[in-house]
Amino acid sequence: MPKIKGRIPRESWHSRSAWALVFLCLILLGVQTAKVHLFPDYRIVRQSERQYWAQVPVSTSRGDIRDRNDVPLAISVPSASFYIDPQFWNPGSADVLAGYFGDQIARKFSGPLQGRFHWVVRKVPADIAQGLIDRRAPGLFTIRESNRMYPHGELASHVIGFCDIDDYGLSGVEREWNKVLYSPPQTRLFVRDAKGSLLDLIGSNAGALQVGAGSIKLTLDSKIQQVMEWKLKEGAVATGSKWGVGICVNPRTGEILAMASYPWIDLNDRKSFSNKEMLRNSAIGRVYEPGSTFKPIMIGIAREMGLASYGEKFYCRGRVSIADGIIRDVSSHGELDLAGLLIKSCNTGMAAIGQRMSPHKTYGMLRQFGFGQRSDVEIAGEEEGLLRSPEEWLGMTKANVAIGQGLAVTPLQLVMAMSSIANGGELLKPYIIAEVRNATGRVIHQGRRRVRNAVLSPGTCEWIRTALNRTVEIGTGKGARVEGVRLAGKTGTAQVATLGEYKKGRYASSFIGFWPHEDPEYAMLIVLGEPSGAKYYGGEIAAPVFKAILEEMSQLKVIAKADASNPRNLRPGGHREGSE
Image 1 (cartoon, rainbow, N blue to C red):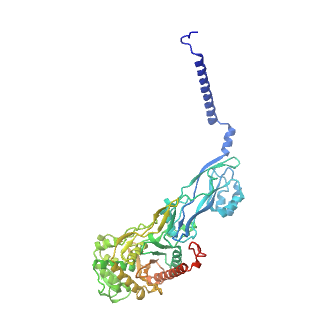
Image 2: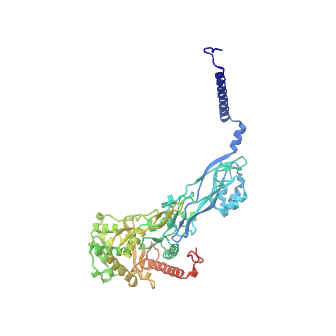
Image 3: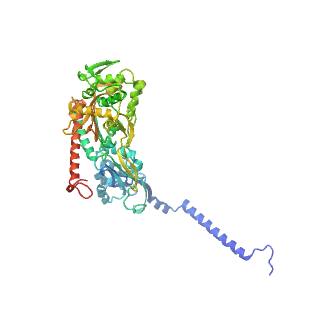
């Protein structure tokens, strides 16, 4: 049959009808979907309002911090955090909280609450939390987290530092190396039905939280650190000192073996953080005038400049007028040679040498020794000290600097400068980080010996070491002398300036030394700030503390040698029986 022009074929008509039916179904579905979303059944609305979901960030494990012998100083441990959903919480159950967290928290949840999520307490130790979990109080729920714990409490507290409630580093190594140690919070999605039953918890079945960050090994020796803290506290309490500092370093490498700042804090007890002054690491964050402990450095500079000779004679009458002021000594020392200025700690003789010095050259040399600038040690909170520009060295300034006044240093700067004399003339960069590993265990940083500047000739250093040994044997440093130890050292007693004026009765008393003096293995500084007792000279109060620490360190060394030589004291792997 011939096709009629303009007529739609039967097959095409059927195809268009099918597509029209599809479009009609899609339109009906769209209308119904919009109706359900925009105008839901009131029963569905009421039911959904009783359901609950929330995204909650919870802390994960932070990387460990250990000492040079792998003794743990900061670790993360499992803990539990509690929260309340007011939809299911009965305010009458608040007494349950009082037995675990106190009346204040119980009162907070004893009345009506708004919203659907309220933290009760974060980071509760697992053993304490379990008792409350077993009570199964309706509306009280638990989240597993990790909590930062410091096994030794106060030990090296200012070096280690601390974190906030979410384990983010706020001070010390915890802050400076936060990028390595910190593991970002894990976000959990909680969904509960109208009965309070758990419908879904994303990540809850993933097992225990894993360490998600790197780890750090310090150069600190926890045994030396402990001894230093014990003896420093004893000395500070006995003398009524407001603050104290102890630092022990290896002068050959720049490793910091111990760093103590009194008063310290208990890292596991936030109540001890209430006094902001206690949070300061005085070893790097406090500046003070070093007094006579600065004299060996100034004699070294004078020798390098050719401004003083070993055989030169100085006559001390007990006081000398310079410009608009007077430099005084404790007594008249009479005639002294250059070594005698150190042995007797003579101010007038040092002032005479200071007057010969060029302000610009002396300033440059002091900068070479690291004064007036940060050492960039790997801890947050370091100060740079105070070293005025040469143009400001007017009147008595040159004489004052020569006796260790008129400038301000940090304890770390001073002990590193003295270490340069101990090691033969090289100023080293101090370091407290021995090793850093990332999350996979790969070493990404290692501390090592770094020379900042060559400051003195070996001959000058050798002469000063010998003079400082005599200072301990027959001079002002006799209070630090230990039988059998060839110690070199220097006392210091400096007045503390307030608003530009020195106040009578305010002193910083110190002793700095190194041993054995021919080829030193250790250098140490002890400072007692603002003692309130009758005694305040460095030789009277700081030197005995130095001596007590040195005696304990010598004993530790004897024990270590005995262990190393007697295989019966060691387990496989080289660990002593009964030790960590």
